[in-house]
Each structure stands twice: as structure tokens, then as C-alpha cells.
Image (cartoon, rainbow, N blue to C red; front, side, top):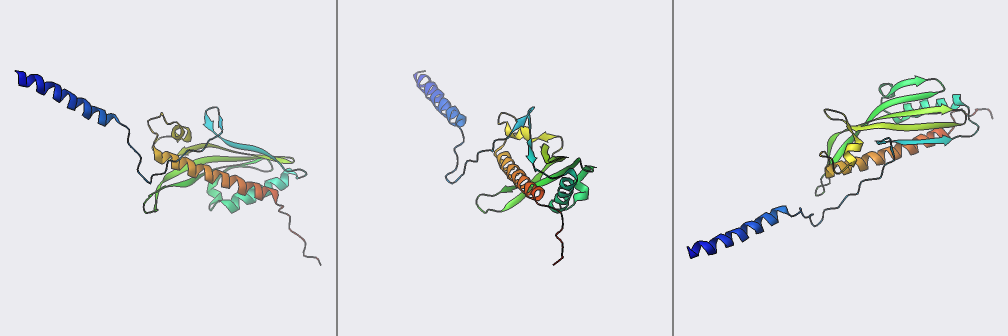
Length: 193
């Protein structure tokens, strides 16, 4: 009987110690880099890239030409991207970008899916507005980028942080490219000399 009195508390202590080790957080590996997700501008709970850009002294017809030329130069298949085209007013398109996962050890990239988005460029006299909305990871059902941002959602994973970083970088590059194209004239210079 005395033997049981000693064994039972010892077993209880061992069980408590083992439960405690299972409850500990997973330690990060020695060379593992902690990624920080970018900060996004949210409007009505959705991620939006939008800005009104003034282009003084340029008529809507010229801005429309610049915008149309940009869509044709930027996208490999502009006919498949452009969904709405209202002359001298706006061009709306739906496009997608590939997402990749990178192995930290081998630095190889594996294709991990697509991120869809909608881009609208509205045109007025002396200004234009780009709006990039409906950014979502292609999956069986609609999965907005907002779900990837929220770390308390069940879909949150560290791989989602890499998707957000890739998407944010792509959108910023797209916006820079659009602004450069919209700032340059489409009028051809005369060959008279």
C-alpha cells in the first residue's frame, strides 16, 4: 500500500510535466526569418488600392489613349483582361497574378496558386483614378485577401504572409508602371526636319 502512495504522486508529476511540454509553442528554427505582412488600406472592410492622379492640361481623349496603350503593353492578353471599355471615360479589367512558395533551404520557387483582382481606370479632364479591388486568392470558394490578413481566421498560415507580400509588391509595381505610362504622351513626333 505504501508503494502505491509513492508511485501515484510520481506518476501524476510525470503526467503534468508531459502535458506542459505539449502545450509549449513551437520554437522557430535557428535560421528561420519571421515575415511581417504589409499594411493595406482598407475601405469598407476590403483591401483597396486607389488614387486620383492629376495630369494637368490633358484632355480625356488623350488620357484614354494612354490608358488603353498601357493595358495593351502591360498585360500579355489584354483582350482577355479588359471587361469594360467606355471610350474616353473608363477601362475596367480583371486579371490575376501567380503566387509562389519559396523553399528557404534551396531557394526554389513552387507555384502555389493565383491571386485575382479587378482594376478600373476612370478618366476625366486633367485627371484619372485607378482603383484595384476584389483581390482574392483563387480557391474553391471566394477567399478575399482580407481573410489572409486576419491572423485569428482559421485560414491564416505563414504562407499567406508570403502571398500578401507578393501581392503588395506586384500592385505597387503595377501602379508605378501605370503612372509612368499615363504621364507620357502618345502623340507621335513629326519627322519633318
